[in-house]
Image (cartoon, rainbow, N blue to C red; front, side, top):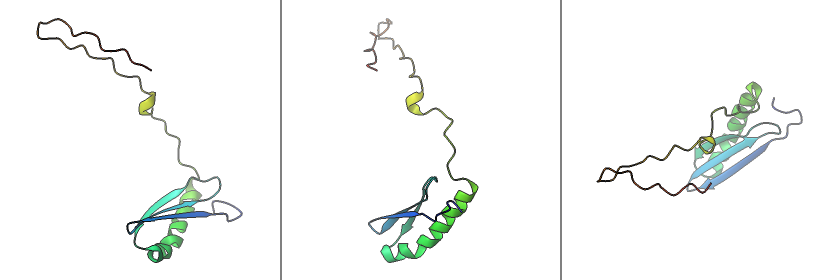
Amino acid sequence: MANQNGELKVVIALKDGKASVGVQAPECDPVFFGHKGDLAAVLSVVPGFVDVAKKRWEKTKLNPDCETPLPSQEKPAAPARVATSRGSPAPKSQPPMF
């Protein structure tokens, strides 16, 4: 089991006949599910969602860290110089602000 004291949080968000369900336990990453239907329909499947989350947490409580660089961490590409119709290079673009 994911935790010893049985603490568990289930969050249900309903919109336009669709539900987003999140299940979370202390020191575990949340597990998210989607389901179509009204509140009664969603409540009937929540125990199954909790079981799936607990089984996932038995294998690993936390998702692995991302090891690939995020787009914001990549170096920007060098600006390309475009030749004008006369064959001379185009004027330099404005330098980056950041």
